[in-house]
Length: 146
Image (cartoon, rainbow, N blue to C red; front, side, top):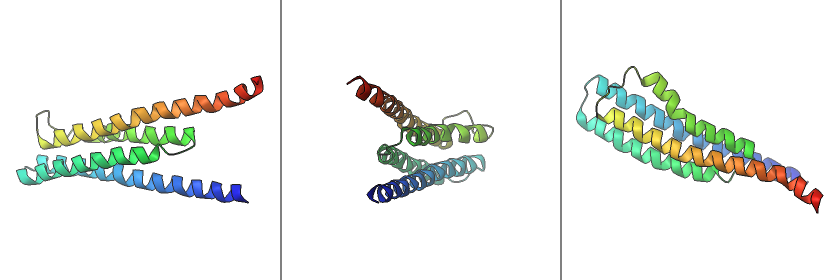
């Protein structure tokens, strides 16, 4: 009975983490799109700078969410979370690349900061998932050898 309740609570926690992660990543992509649109339509420089600053705050939330996601017990789920974190900015880059200018504008800085935050957070999470996966595989072998 206790195991069933523990499994349900872990599943519930995993879903909560996934929802928070999805919300943070969606917010980051939305701000990227807004920054590109603002630059493309030559809107106020204040707006593009404000979007850039908000994107920096979202980058901090990406890192914080990654730390929270690292508590996930399942290495497979952890790997999927890390893959989602790492792949999100590249997917948005594929969509937004025709509209991003090559210069040093706020939209480009917004994109670069979000990409760096996601990659710096996602790749170590992949390594942690790999280490946990290997350690899970070695547990039965180690107990059988003893």
